[in-house]
Image (tube, rainbow, N blue to C red):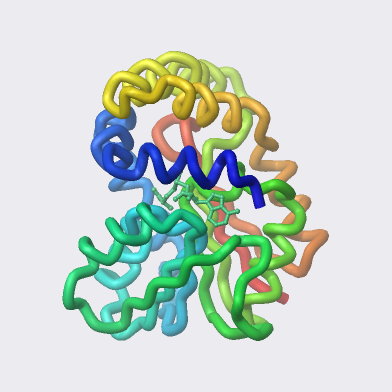
Length: 229
Ligand SMILES: C[S@@+](CC[C@H](N)C(=O)[O-])C[C@H]1O[C@@H](n2cnc3c(N)ncnc32)[C@H](O)[C@@H]1O
């Protein structure tokens, strides 16, 4: 686990939501909603859900809105992020909070039928280990939902992504959090990440099938839904 990344997220936790909504012009809210709709559109109803790299809990809360009976575990290695998530979750039932490294989750194999991960995968020390751990968590037929800033491949996607990741993210994020280094890191982690096609191949190599990709806001972000074999 990278302690540098853990402490960086701890530092920006208090301003994370404001920065997120501001730098995405509130699009992050609809990106999470569309990702959950994408996962449920064939009639799949999640019942035991892991929100991996849960941060302040926004993905988990969208899942609860669309599947109110689901039990959702929010896992993150940043305590300050989880404290904010707990406050947001309030007295809602069916939410649990676990401080844990995404690469060494404290759950037996096949504990969940759904894993959601919003903007978390690109922070992991090893992307492949992260995908393997997601696969380990899921029962056969379960679904992984990953929302991320993938390296663009098309021209239009490239343009929107470049403006967003290179300019808006570090400038607005840095200004709101007063932590330029953190948002420069987030920019660099996006720029160094894989393309959505490469991520699809990694999923298929590590126990997933039926990988379905949707582009968000002209390719700035993508949601990937995959079924555990
Ligand atoms: C960019 S935030 C995303 C938060 C939230 N999922 C969202 O949709 O806004 C990334 C989160 O991943 C967590 N994280 C990064 N690396 C992690 C790891 N190795 N294990 C557990 N959590 C991790 C950070 O603490 C942070 O809360």
